[in-house]
Image (tube, rainbow, N blue to C red; front, side, top):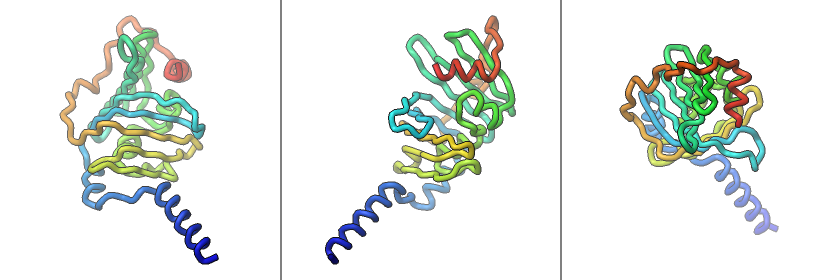
Length: 198
């Protein structure tokens, strides 16, 4: 009986450790929190279904509010989303459509299904729990997270695998400029969400 109890306890502890990876040294966490710029290739899953498809996203940011997300596709980007000075532009080159609005949680949620403000996205990627996320779990690489998971206030579950994260990368300021959209039709947030999901 004692052996069985010990085995069950060991299994429980192993499962707990697997669910909550050990944190890195404090200096690693502190360095990640203070990053001024960052880039990475992301594999994003939204929702709680195990078989939910993943979306590839190329991400880059410069604090405090500059964010660029690209969804690559054959023949060019499917989506280019940039935020700067409190404004958001989502460009859909293949559909020749553009959405513009405030860069806040509501608008990003309406478009992408993930109601995180640009600063929340930055924190989520570098191992800092955003104020609207619970159950935040991070798997760390040597200096930066390699996976981050959490549940948003609206119940959305977000699981991001982070490949090739680079800290302090030099990103041209023009990368966050509003992309050229002459001749593009203007669309609503709902229409942008439909294009994002295709």
